[in-house]
Length: 314
Image 1: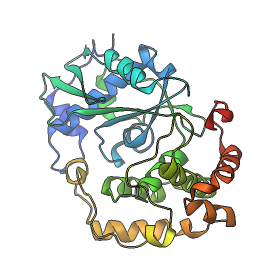
Image 2: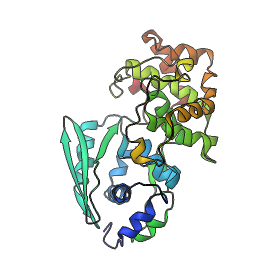
Image 3: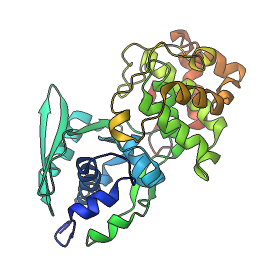
Image 4: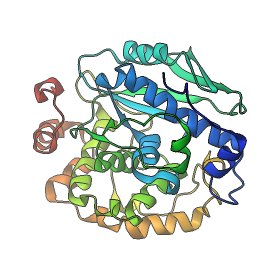
């Protein structure tokens, strides 16, 4: 059983966060508890139904201790026909479990699931947000956890999890920053652009995906992709311009020292200047006109590698 042979102490928690970071043991409790929960969900077959994505996937499977702590469990449905609310309920039901020193308690409010963690080692102040989105556009692949010293205390080997490619994680954060200004997304993008070998991600593919994601954020697509709140076109000049205000919620909690937002902004713009290099069709799609649906679908079919029928997009 996951966690049955875990040997974790307060000392292990203190060593799990960066030395001198000022982050408390509660953050380490959450981060380690996520590992055990993800392993449990894998053991229960949940990852036959969903793919791992988002900021937590970035930390666990790409960045390790260099990555930002994340409180979300972001998943993508594998089957386009799956009811995502029902799928989230399945994941939540499998998350009602005790694993080693951790207990997990999912609860739903207005169609959103959160998972409260309690622990013999202390209780995190924040809960885990559970979200199941539509299928990814790029084919997922199994990816190992980045090895950390604390993993040796778990009493089992962490499994490889099916994960979206880094290009799609980066793309979703770029698209989100077209309509909002979340410092955590900017920090993740900067990490991806400056950390070898991950910084070698396919920029041409990301540009192509980014304008498509933004168009879908504006108009939705098929039955699975709903339009986002407060959508905006993708204008590289606007994207690469100073924001009136960055939403730095959780940045101070989850990274230490928290990055100076003006420096974060300057570095982000420097490393993503290549977003200006759009083709003629990409510039047209970036304007997010609803009448360009045919062009969007045709273009999407050229980059789509996920195993679902493109006809379902119509």
